[in-house]
Image 1 (cartoon, one colour):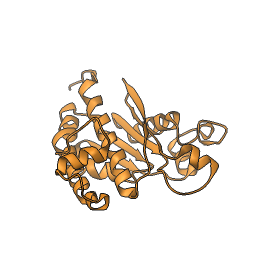
Image 2 (cartoon, one colour):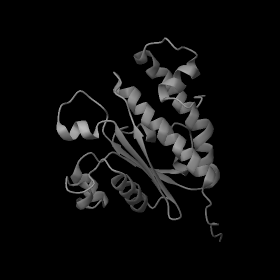
Image 3 (cartoon, one colour):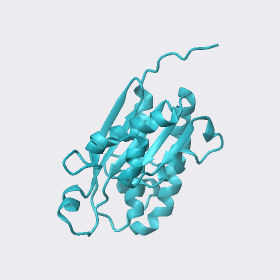
Amino acid sequence: MLRITDGTYLDSLRLSVKDSQKDDELLIGEGYYLLHQYAQQTVIPLLVESGRTISTVELTTCGLISDLLTGKKGASDFFVLGITPYTSEMKIKLGVSLDLLTHNGPGTVSPQSAHSLAQKVRQYSNSDIGIAETGMLPTEFQGRRTRKRAGEIFLAIDTSVKNTAIELKLESNPSRLLMRQEIAWNVLTTLEDFLNTIEWPKQKTL
């Protein structure tokens, strides 16, 4: 299983595969397998034990988190919806305010937008937990706004009783797939911590 360290995702991945020299591109397959193993052995059992449902919004991982959470039989018991609303139009249809998305507002890459996306997908899908990530992967693309935002990733989890948001700072990596894995890894670890600390209200029984 992917062992968590104080370093980066790549540090943890290399530690888990016991190979500090392997080329980053060759680590993608191992990373995908280990992320699934981590989700199935740690995060999914916490979701099942909680008896709560979850829905996701993914703007940089593009479905990887949904894939990790649904990689085991029985996922329909807790997983409701996973979406990637790339355009502002789709985010607004989900319920996010236009004021959040404009250049004069916080913008799509912001903790406010991450929280709004998590809240709106939870409400739309009638899930207990909404989780969202938004950001911009560091690239070579030139542009003032892009340089300002490159590498900023915001994660948010929303429930009716508690919510949280964190910011990640990614360094440019030759592989976008490894960067997406790093974001997904952070989402899973954040979700694990969240599920281990939240106190749910008692569910009514018939």
